Image (cartoon, rainbow over all chains, first blue to last red; front, side, top):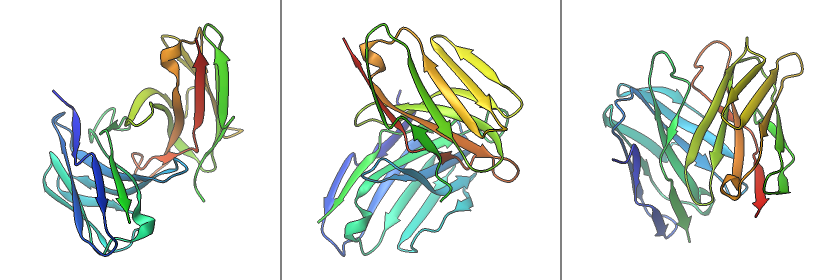
Length: 114
Length: 113
């Protein structure tokens, strides 16, 4: 009955590798997001998809590529991982109509790049 | 930076006391929200206040908004040990993508039993 789920929960990898994080929501929401939270707990939006269409794309290196196969899923692929990519990545979702401002977050994926 | 600022950065109180956290932001907003993050967990939405509202209540939570000062406060009354968490404000910008939230720096609240 998990609302927004992410896999994996932890990801430890070497510099230069390519990795993916998956996100799924069962809330019937139209919009999904990826956020990055750094070691100082600063939380910043990276991407947002609405009905599989990219609507927010912040200044993120193009090594990061989101993919939304359907409106219940939003995956994040990262190429050529760097040390600075180490962070917690949160997926979130919301409706795209009345009350759309409230976002529901997943538990996070803790990425450590060695 | 568009990041909002929160103060204090950390707050330690005794169970039963009230906790007040403040948030300042930089741009015009459509709404302001407060989220809680327990250690090692995702964020949980607490309350939303719109730019035309000045005060809102939800259970033990009271939020105020002063758009002239670009600031908001979150008051948690009769705190409990379970309230121990980080609290973040987030603003939805006026115009454009109102769901493009800009988060504050967070306040770490510790409630001692």
